[in-house]
Picture 1 (cartoon, rainbow, N blue to C red):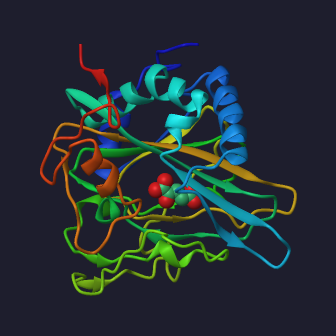
Picture 2: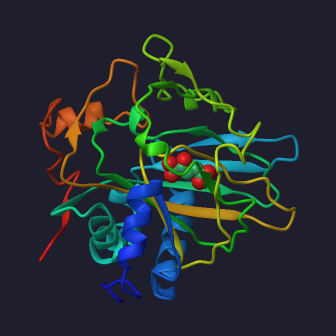
Length: 286
Ligand SMILES: O=C(O)CCC(=O)C(=O)O
């Protein structure tokens, strides 16, 4: 397995990441990493973690399956997290001195799923806070730009606290103890209706092949994806990475995924820097 990126990240890509809060990185991972993750995802779907659930199940039985922080039980994910170039990619983009792993999340749409992810920003939901938080979004299947996750460039610089969607509502199987958030008391504004006028927001997305990834700042507005053709599925593996300015933040509006219990268990408190075996340091700048 190649532990180095399949190619060097360019200075222009790093600039774009900071200017737009999102950058497409074509051909970053060798096929071997994609195959390993595919195997891991199969194992994950057969053995979902306690955070997993179906977000959408339509009248034709098509589903959108979600899981997060499954890595401790999936050997292939562990290997990807510790040995793949993903941490280095995040570190170079964020210009960080060191990178800790936060968590993995998967978004698996069965063929023809029409489910579109509601627009949101990630950081307001997370049990950490900081500018230096980055998701590496990797489709394990080819995806067209109209079916891939879409982004509002520059939205990572907005300082407004928007009313974010409660993903706890996506629970057709009525599971108990699903993470819930309520932004109504702290929101300064309703979340903009981006689908009403995507051009005005400059919405971007890309055709992608396995081995490509998109890296985005957790403050960047993103959503959509899905709305697949009948013969197309979409299997996406994401990793979330933490850089230099990140601290633990237990939020009054709720968290999703809520890490406050597992963080407390390993001795992490509000305000701490992330660490321990649960949020391992994976990369340091030479
Ligand atoms: O792929 C998707 O549909 C959603 C991904 C997402 O929201 C995320 O990785 O934060």
